[in-house]
Length: 173
Figure 1: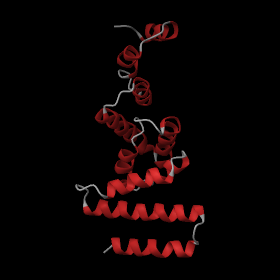
Figure 2: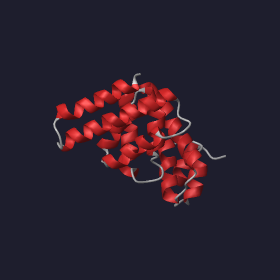
Figure 3: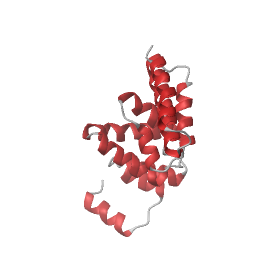
Figure 4: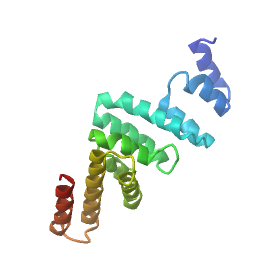
């Protein structure tokens, strides 16, 4: 087994194949974000493994607070928002029930309203979703619509708020 110094020397002086780099450096040392980058470069689409890496990133960052967690998600999303390694539905489904407003991150990295709203709508329609989670996602979808309508100024804020408040009231029944 090589020492850290030998490994650093090899990394500095040799060109590695991606699978060797992943198996000998990225995975053993737990470089989670680099794992996602390697999967992107390799076109590796193993959803359970990608989601497990995201779960590890979330678990590592969550104790540091929402700001730290969002910074990491935003950093990865800015680079890979359109890639299979940025699983929008998974992130929404994992974080929204815990009170994190994922749509704010998605907006900040430039994901179109229609795209992230579709993810929320799809989650609402998941047959196995618990009733309380369905209500949460239903309310979030209404809030997204309200935010979008206000931002594009199609109608006034007062006209937008009334239907959303009605949806929120109906969901609390």
